[in-house]
Length: 150
Image (cartoon, rainbow, N blue to C red):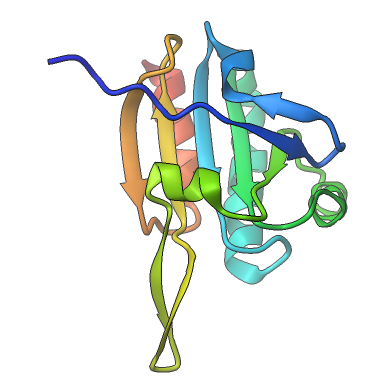
């Protein structure tokens, strides 16, 4: 049975340029979704990836973080924490929905729709090699390091 292709997309980056998943064909990609820039869990997630990035980049693995934040908020977040990877803006959460990373959440006994902290490993041909929803913030770095070891 063939592995499923990751949904393709084009989104605006933290620098205001368009970035497409297909730009990275031929490379392994770790794509992760996070709810909101500069919040505690999202900062933990981004900084865990940042702290392991030299090893990840050495193996030519691309890391992309996606949230509903606007490009200006992403740029501020990236600069504040010196994040060496691309952040993309998905304000209407269409890409998150395509990946299954948009769903019902609970806070203080109330239900609402939002980003499910998730990560995905995509191979050089654009196929999923791993998918995980509702991950803990530091596990995205673990996935990236696992890809490096392959």
